[in-house]
Image (cartoon, rainbow, N blue to C red):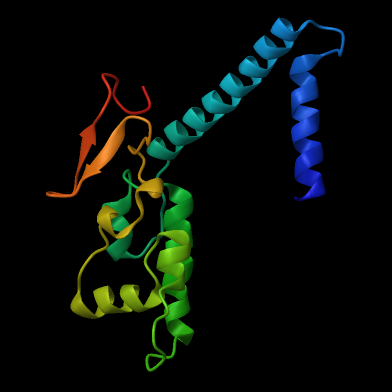
Length: 155
């Protein structure tokens, strides 16, 4: 485990615990508050991603805007830029697609050569702005999202 991550987590918890003389209930409530703050931070981050618009992206990336997290689009653009040095005879190992859940340079070259655009379906669900694993699942028959709870995702 990374020591700096442990220290960072320890410091974060100390902010909420304040002292070591509380009863078990107050410690539990403080920890619950810390977790709630982290969840709120994630939701705010996703909300800001939904309104953030990238500029200067290749045309094939335009259908992704507003549907895929900007960090995933930026990583995919980096993979697209690798096309300049990509050896077309080298076989694709699908490392990028399997490891990151984004299209690999070989797939991007294929789409570019066919004149096709990227689609949100080319990305793993973890990169979709409207995906929430707690309330949505994929229907395998039509590959659409099904809501499994009464609340909309990220409300």
